[in-house]
Image (cartoon, rainbow, N blue to C red):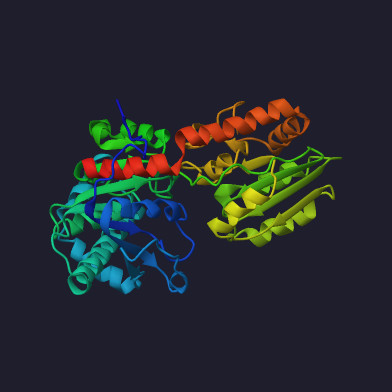
Length: 431
């Protein structure tokens, strides 16, 4: 039986803990990890002090910092080091017995390769470098009593929890938990098909928290001995109320929101819309990425005049929520080849907007076929997406409203931030 974290935030009680040490990859710098913008708003209800250690930062990331809820938050930016520094720290890793145990494990499982050995050394060198920076910062900057009274929470399930376990050597009473998403969870989706020290982390972390049942099933399937340590705690989004319902289907209004990267497959939306003739369609995409200019050029070449499209680039979450409130949309589109659980779909459904999405990762836990949206196979053809868009175009008002009502209801039941994050933080207190 897997553990499932779900509490009603209004009734869970708010027991204060002293400290939270949060390890992030970027947040609150730059635009990365936008989901944390909602989650951190709940921390000070449960913790007296919150220390955010932002790892892997580049110079461009440091140019902007998002506003934090209060002065209870202290931020330590840890800049990405040079290759020489990481090389030096890899020598420090030579004294770590886990290095040799992992090498032996790779050999025993006949998975040894040069690329995987390099990945293991990078993993350990980063961990030692960043743990050292954090230790020095606490010793120099923080006046504290019993800093080890609390929780270290790694927002990623890759090398970052190992940083936490190195810190535990200084603060032995810290509870260590890590959250797994997608890229940091599914080894098969990595170039080397390998993420180091999985089993060691599971054995030594207090809990490993998945954002989707798919992630729980995946991890328990590979490491069943640790099933009691692997729990489900869903992400959540803030309630901004229902969106304006479009008055008619005369112009079908579509919205998508994601980075413009290979994994998001925005080109398939373009190809699908190119097959829709003789009806007016408006498509807005929010988000930027390395492929943005290529996708724009592709859309110019392929899309006919009846398709009015606009790539808006990056917008902050507050602006995006305002757009949902003020502009009527019929459908949200997500055609990723891989997902953890897409927060963008949760956000759209909180406004009552149904979704057409690919059945990958934990998406099927948000989108229920023929209830609040449509699930496409992961290898769908553009004609499949075009066909379902036309189904919604021809849908009568009552049936379409049923999809909108169910979208909102699904969000209320499973992805309400108040319920999910209060439950999660209360759970940390009970570990």
